[in-house]
Image (cartoon, rainbow, N blue to C red; front, side, top):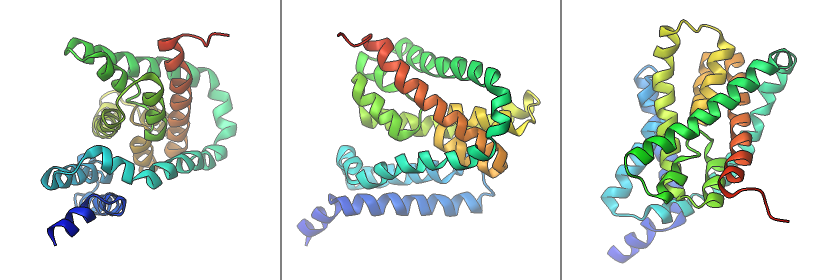
Length: 237
């Protein structure tokens, strides 16, 4: 009987069910807490999953591989964010210059700040490479980490932490800096807090969600193209 339970806990089906159950538990807590940022379902769900993995002494790598289906679906879900963005396209064109400037500065600071803090704290090369794509949505961050030699599990954890920190710190910063424009709020949330920030932006308004989608997609594309190039140099012909 013990062997049967052990086999079940280490199966891909258990990993998938654990992720879904963790998210549902997080969603319940988020609604009960009146949408407290720290109780966001992605954050609370991740904590729930981490606790279960620790208690049952399950391998994180095996759990991650068991969620291959969910990881695959993240790609189409990210692409689907283009739908609300398309509805704002006529307004986005008039803001091309400030958007591009904000993108380059924001994405650059995201990478440099993560790597810089990691270096100051004594992180090794693999750790620093794992931290670099921390402000990119999970499927893109995993692909970048694989290409540049980072550790996927560490990158995934840092991405979730970044999203949680972003949706927690952004609202008070918006109030402090008197940023009331939903377009700016959305773009900042998408750029800095990727998928979690985009979900939070849609709670503000559809327009904020559209600009968060823009920030998420542009940051992912720029980081995916620039980071491997900067670290490894141009391909040799």
